[in-house]
Length: 136
Image 1 (cartoon, helix red, strand yellow):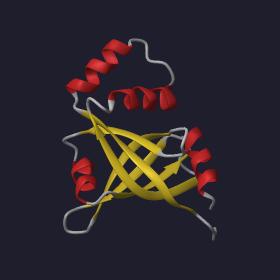
Image 2 (cartoon, one colour):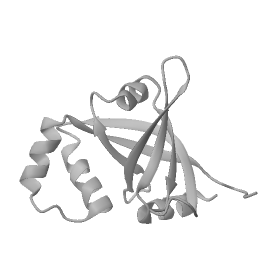
Image 3 (tube, helix red, strand yellow):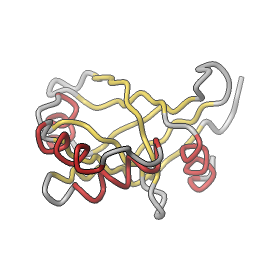
């Protein structure tokens, strides 16, 4: 599948399962919400203390399976290199992520305070591969 086509699917669908690698190489899966920035990179908000963050700091590569709200039907898998952006640098990206995934927040000051309290980070995935390429 073309990476641009996959990114377009992600712009309209935000429910996903993120796969990272544990220290022993086994997969660790996390349900997440995702968004896509103007450059076609995937944005995910998570906590600095989350296992997925620790896994991605050790091995900055991830796979993401994104599906519709109905779950069954169309889906896309993307994978790629990961950057983790921590606060304070992450704040503008956290706002962008929220807007792209959910629209306007009723109280941006409250949102920003919650992001600091929760020690939020942005996981940003540069898509290097997308699929499926065949169905069967």
